[in-house]
Image (cartoon, rainbow, N blue to C red; front, side, top):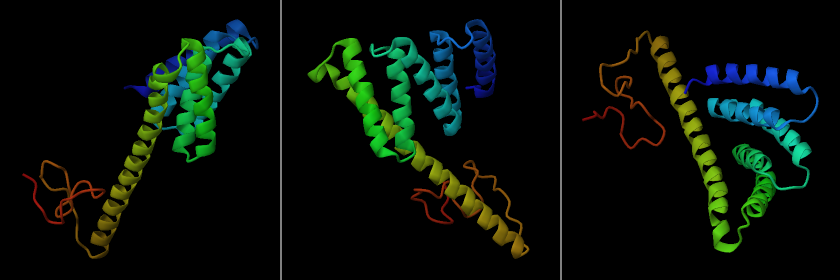
Length: 188
């Protein structure tokens, strides 16, 4: 999606809501902060996402106190995913436990009926791990491409893109991470 446009509109909404409600904790401000956290998380800015989500959580907890509420539970769930992404597994499990307990309290579920919430959290953890590996592979692809380009310039050879449909550099697969194709292999 168009993350920048969403971010701009949410920032405008947040400014209006803060002008309207001042320093008083309000659910609209908390929800807008949550939405901002979600948008910047999806755009890849994990630090800003954590800041928005933590502020949303603080406001939601100030509003709802110890009463389980979906706004608190949603912020906890995304913060747990960020903890998993950052490799902070102790915090991940603690935050996950709080989120699942809150989900159970909100929806009055126990045993097998609580399984969807638990699977949701495990799924978030696995998705974050996959995205982390994908990001590392992308970085490796860029590094390999840069190294080949540098090596080619050093030798006085110009490495250009081929006219192949996969966009690979001649003789190098377009994705070196996890690729089963060997160098020089052609694609069908």
